[in-house]
Image (cartoon, rainbow, N blue to C red):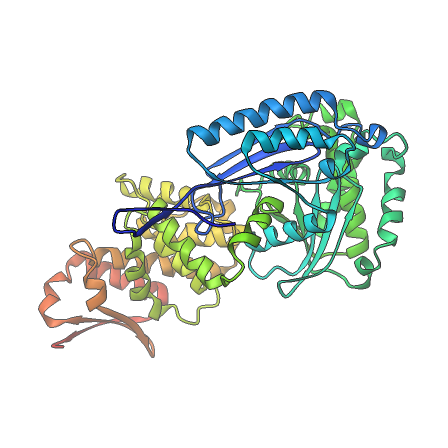
Length: 503
């Protein structure tokens, strides 16, 4: 797929065009729009409609009539949104329902005429590949089993060292199961075991991680997140261990219709499928015995786009573009975050508790203050940072960065809510305080101009932290600068030393 760009009269590239993807599934149809997919994999438009195109597909082998009517209305609305927004870069994908329905051709023709775009109907294996590629977009160093549960099918893919080594597609979609004339909830486990038995690779090697993709599993994990009062209300990279989730799945699997009506926090369109998703997940866990079960919001749609956009781009380039994008969108200093990073970096080299990725992001995100008072700034920036629309951040990493940004704005003696601190060990908390103190100190130096960050040097030697400044700028060392330099030194457990140079 070619990325279109707008150009000015001098033929200079200004910005990539917006990009949309429509995913036509057995249960729902969704459209995502990205401002610049190569810079941010988080869409600014994300809308879903539960159309149930694949309802009773196993019985009739045809698209559900009312589902088709509703889907056409939804797609017409999506078409109008794209036209009004002047978005011409569009990809349309479809999965099990259009693969299997014997009467899919008229519907496909309707969609292709409406959008003037061919639908890419993915095979089961292509679905598995796209889902795995989507998870690779949302996580660092993916290693384990990717399981994508949709309305019509379940896709499984093993990822080892970033490579997809095994893949399969099974007829285990939640919409398919809930309408299956033969397979009922009471004998579903037996049915799943029989299907898994044919996939020898599943049981040959145990998996470190199990990555869950799909709306029903997101709903299941959202319910678990809220019931357990998890403070970070972000479903992406929400992670639980085998022991923690097992009893929860057993409880959800036993829910009848009356009990499902009492379920809070999640969409009512998802609740009927919860017991089925719990049983399927439990059987996958029994076969693969993963240590960590992790929810992913990036999957088939992101993966299908990644195949077009990221063929020859390495992870460092993707991260660099993401940093620049987020600094312009969420920070108030644009690319000057790089000056802050280069200034404080020498005192954090080799810090295993606050790595280079987190340090970069702390420098980017610590400037979202919007002109409030000091303590209000700290609270606001903490929440903004915690909820930053970046995919490749675990919940622990989000808390670390948010804490460093919090302490950038207020004294170390203040703390955010204690439940956040319980996710980190003492070293990680200390490192967040140190980064916050370093950013607070750097900001005191730049109250006149960030150019001083290029001329001053901050570094560690022995049991001291040094600030080296040109002699002609010694008037910059005000009482506030001195106070914050000493505070940084205390957090680093070092002695503060100021050196003046004539060069």
